[in-house]
Length: 293
Length: 296
Image (cartoon, rainbow over all chains, first blue to last red; front, side):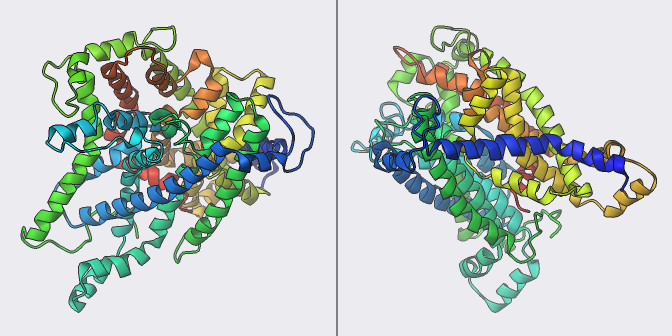
């Protein structure tokens, strides 16, 4: 290789290298370091070991946030996967108006979580929303005030998020289904295997790469869940629908407790690595997968 | 699988059997579930407040009016200033246009350098980029705020553009690298033999061949940056708050009686840009999802 071009390649990578060193590795290390200090409003350099972590674990709001994100993550990922796969499988039955249906199922994904949250907040409004509609339809005793009930508010976030992301799963699954060998369908028909069994025991295992991709995308958005909670319930009622990302943001910028916030952020980081790394390995090790690097 | 065949591959249909009618009925119900929030936002925005207070959220407005849209655009209030959501619209444009250009440029160059030139450490750099795509932003935000305020970049358009470049880099690099890596190596070698250097190969050969992926990148970045909330909130500063942040402020900081019609009009206005991108780009949008989905 010519020296000039070699140099040019390094110059071209300089911005990315700088970003990786300063904004990614540097910032991440700094966050982790702060979490071991007694920082309050401003970062301090007094090392206090795991003290921030012990107060984090004892913090009621953090406990609520962790419980919420566990409920949200499990329900959101499983419901979005099921609905998305079901829609893809049904659309794949040579239905009329496929393009229209795909557009309808996927459009929510193009909108922001703020828009999604505000739309659903209005829809679930206990005075004017769905509850009123159902009562007007004659179901006098119909109750749907989950968005203002502390023990139920997190489930309304799940509903909005599933609405937002199910189309994404559908798009991924549909691409996977279109890659299934048509011979396979002929073979199962010859053998007279019922369709639902074909889907459950042959197609789903075949599409595990698509499932891994979908799960990774959904899991990433679970860890980042912030805007939706802010727009829809603002963590309320009370602290009932708080989530970890919001805990960090509030303690960084409103409550001036940088030490506690960075301890929470570091805990999030460890959790994400522990969850995503095996998923990535699974996705990359599937047969026929192209390698990333 | 080439992915070019888009013929449905499920079992071929018979006649319109009861099972098929059930299938269509189920799909129709799902379509209603997906469309209801948009419909409700739309009809609410076209109603006057007395009609909204009657509580028929699904009913078509008795006298559709764009008054709430006008108010949302020109005079909705955030705190004490009542200049409407158009302020946020303009701010979002001021943030989005340079952010899209800069982030795609940096991503394209990085992806190109990583795919054909493979300088030392390329694998490590690429690994770091991919890892960051999954890590919650909360891990980076506080140190970046400190660094930016030290550099005088806090609360400025250049600052938020830099932030969008930083956090757009993993996906942008990935899709460009994957695109270039799929091009035949001979193309690159032939250009080298002809004496073309790094930038010449990029400008004269690679960039023209990257047009489809540039379209995908533009779709991803336009919707992603327009929909961003958290970075705009933290890094843009009061004078440059993007539309999503202003929308949330309008709705969640209202004093006194809430005007649901204005709120819904403002919400729809905020959703307009990504919705237009989505419906105009069609299958390209799905390609963007697939390309950005770190599928390796």
